[in-house]
Image (cartoon, rainbow, N blue to C red):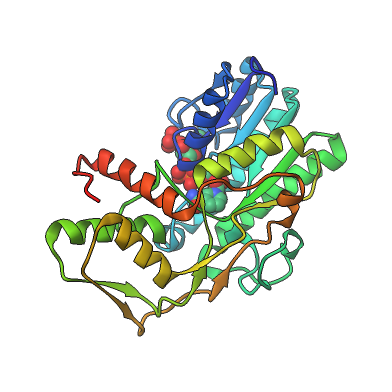
Length: 314
Ligand SMILES: NC(=O)c1ccc[n+]([C@@H]2O[C@H](COP(=O)([O-])OP(=O)(O)OC[C@H]3O[C@@H](n4cnc5c(N)ncnc54)[C@H](OP(=O)(O)O)[C@@H]3O)[C@@H](O)[C@H]2O)c1
């Protein structure tokens, strides 16, 4: 990529797209092409084709997707499979037809088999049954990965795919009804601190292990791979380290300044005991995550407080 390359960041208002945009702008890429969903519905093939014909982006970061937690996935399975299939098909096909030099597609660690051996290597994709609660989403995402590989194999189109672990950071979703565990804990401890609640209850034993990557590290990896990786194999992007939910809760409570008790409701399920990516492939290319978990949570909490217009107290 050159500083004046025409770069389309699809989904630039989302958690990932926003971080990629921040990163590209900070690096001096001055020719970004950005559209909101209202301006360009990537589920609509005719709109996508017309846009790519007119704008002719050279590089495409495909961070537009329909994303959500268990509740949203199980309430809207048709929308999850439809939108993600349509976005992947329309954007990959239109990029190729309009002569784009390269496209980066985003998979996710949650589309690996539910019982994959740990840490999860890229070749474990499609070796076992999927997590049933997000199967329609996972099938659509896997179709996107396969489209990227097939367009490379048949047409020589330079499409690459990343498999990010759980992400967090500024721009995350803090809605208590459907947020992921890290922003959910930040918000719950923040609210409990403000309300003076003496105890916060967390589902499960606290012993499940999870990996978290700051979204700015993911954006760094995406830009790195856009310039360094021209192969069909997937690339896991994570930290290669995990923490228990109990350790995470202690860390978040400490950063938020919540001094009440943390109770674990062991009658509730833990989910998969461990979900950790094997990141040896991207490490061997010379990339490393840079943001330590505590630092990332601290800056995300500051961002949250600024958004919520709440006092930032440590
Ligand atoms: N968040 C994670 O922890 C995580 C982990 C692993 C992988 N990923 C992957 O990263 C990608 C982005 O996730 P995210 O967390 O950034 O999602 P997000 O915050 O929900 O953002 C999704 C973006 O997609 C756009 N979009 C959705 N439908 C569209 C359509 N039909 N046409 C045009 N734009 C559309 C939205 O645009 P508007 O803002 O205009 O509505 C939004 O900006 C996904 O592929 C996801 O699988 C995320």
